[in-house]
Image (cartoon, rainbow, N blue to C red; front, side, top):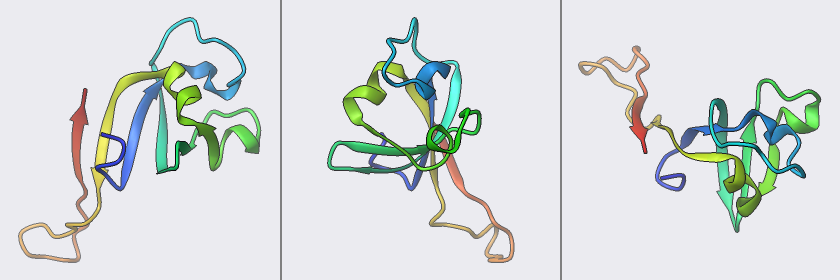
Length: 97
């Protein structure tokens, strides 16, 4: 599901800002996944306590998976027309579980 969309809002545990820790649970906090390449995931975490944990955060996928609840929202921005009107911006979003 992470590789099938342009963007993905993932449910992770909020302690992802400290990736060296073991989270007590998964999910409950949202981050915007922007890329997945060669086993490394990049995301934005609006509540990161410093720039390194807030913008363009990169983690190995296996580290991210410890925090990831396995659910989120896939966002595709390819079709931006509503009723044939390109001036209206509409992204396709679908819940994934």
